[in-house]
Image (cartoon, rainbow, N blue to C red; front, side, top):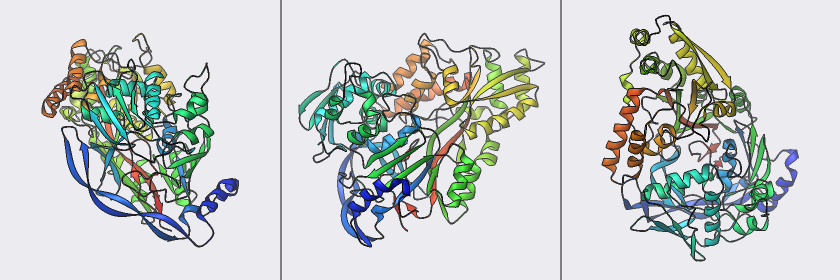
Length: 585
């Protein structure tokens, strides 16, 4: 850990030192405990549970932790700071998720490794202190916590919530899709401000309480933003102030989160801890380090090398072989938890040779999934044996019916009329090492039965452009097969199938589905009874597995790796959170 800021950060260093004061010790917020009762929304019922609420306690921490900088190596170049302005800014969400907050959040649970991660079976209040869903599920009313301020000091009110939700629903993109499709929020009826701390959102029928509240949890997808600041910078050509929100000044002003953006470029960022942060409901009242310095290092091997050399303190998305080495090294800690990464090969059923189910089934029999686990993952992943990620409610391992059997694969290919074999090309996202390694294994097995699989490594954007469905429902012809990692947005098999298996979904690269199966998915989404939902999603998954539109590879754990001085790490699916991360030396 670098206890002082680098020379090019002198301005921020002065700010941090000024906040901390002069001396060998700085007063920081630590945590005591008190038992309280919170209402927790699960996938089945609303129940009262006893939880531990951390209470700020002033203690003296030697060394002035507020002066410390955590150096984080991130894996991909970043796009816009306004997630709603740039739908392809996935890497930027590591920053956005730390400066913006939501009405609700998933709860936390501890893993066997001591890491804290999301509890996908519960949703708890966050910026909202409470909520009430109407008996007819046509509206949800949120009551806000008192005393919360944005980065520029403006108090949070219901007007900000109404404005933010309307913004999310109106600007075309992923946020509008998530709120509309998952949460059933409607853009046709504007939010109602009941009073300064109460707002009512209108819904269309078809969602249950868990999914409604999950939609307003969705990290950078449904954030609550500073309406006064945004409206002050709106123009006729930019009514939602998207250009300003994407600037450092804008991003530093519009969030309620524990961090303020000081610097931001496509290859680096600097976040300053807010000493006036409101505190959340389950961790210390302000960040335990002074700043987060993020540097983009696209090569995973280079990130591992820099961590070993002490040039960075923490990093993400390492090769699994490097994870194993770090896990065996007592100087480092691998923080990991069951993850949402679901890697697979999509086979375009509208293009030969994959318009024949026997060919698709043959590829599934040709993949030695256990070999992938044993040789590639070192215990940090599991064989993907279902049409949806194993982390989802309702998951069924129906691809177990395709045991590794090259003789069966060869016979299926011959039965499909390819006695002399065939060739095809796979589009692979070059940023995913695990997909490339899995494809190499599959290619080696297919070559044994006279099938030539060529791997075309492309950028993420190029793969999406070639394989996503267009507005008219057509797809680029060259996308005969492609690899994908599609983490679930809501951890429910029915919702996952909306994106990957409904016939009109842009990300349905396999072109699987009919009006009948679309209706089955819609019915499963709307089902309120947990056992009935389980039966519905099981039936759909069996149909999918029988038709084999995909070759599932691996379900990979989420992880970050740090030096042993870094503690209290939270694993939050596809983006890290730096909330109460702390350093012991």
